[in-house]
Length: 375
Image 1 (cartoon, helix red, strand yellow):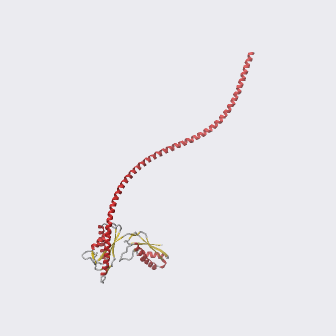
Image 2: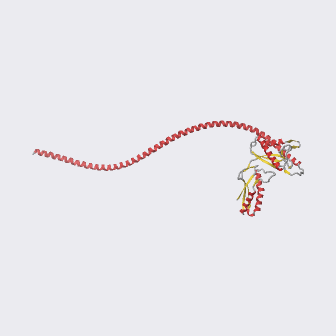
Image 3: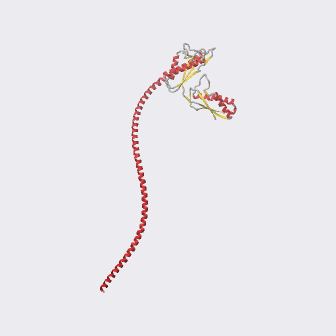
């Protein structure tokens, strides 16, 4: 029985120890449960964080893919830019080479042109000196011709029964010529206008020049008291000189040196004048105000007076060269145009402004074609 008591006491001791251990285990279990619950809560939070991180990771992944695509595009553009830079560099080098070559050629050409210009200037200076001397000779000859015309006109102051064909200074024909004529070209132009003048003289009823078949005009020999005479060839040479080498267009006018009569040839004088542009196309010449309510006759008279006075004066002042001995008008306006203008003014039945203008570009020796506007 004592043995049993000892075993029972040992068992009780073990039970107490086990009980104590159980209490400790229960306490640990409670702590573990608390930790487990805390861990479960943390796990939920971690799962939420993980979901957020997964979403962010997906976004970052997508963005990274975009960046990779952009990077590839940038690399391609960079390659293209590199190729363009190489191409442009090559082109620039080529252009620089061409520019250097062009500058070299230009410098050589410029040096050559300068040498040629110096030579031309030297020749021009010589030519200008010669021209100045020729102009002096020409002015002296023209003075002699004017004196001769006066003396010849005085000597012709007699009564004749024949019909008067031309008066002193009357224009026979005119011909525009270009600038920079050579002497040979000037001689040909002189021949041309003399032929034109001869044909015109024949139409007037002039007679053939003695010893010159088919020629109805000629340069007469002009004699002066105490001066050497001026022959026909001298006068022709002066005209050729006046036409040669001029830098501007010219107008050649063949005039009657003095009065001529039917049954005689017409004594010729050649006048060489500058022929610049005096009016541009559509350029206004003059304007006036006319009352259309005054009727056809009054309007027509007012227009006639304005054309023959103000318009003519302005045109002459501008430099238009009139044809002496022919129609006194210096501007051409057809009868149909005049009638239409009169009717247009009368139809307005009030005061209107009439403006005349040049239809075409007109040089000093051209026929001025008049246009009009009614406002």
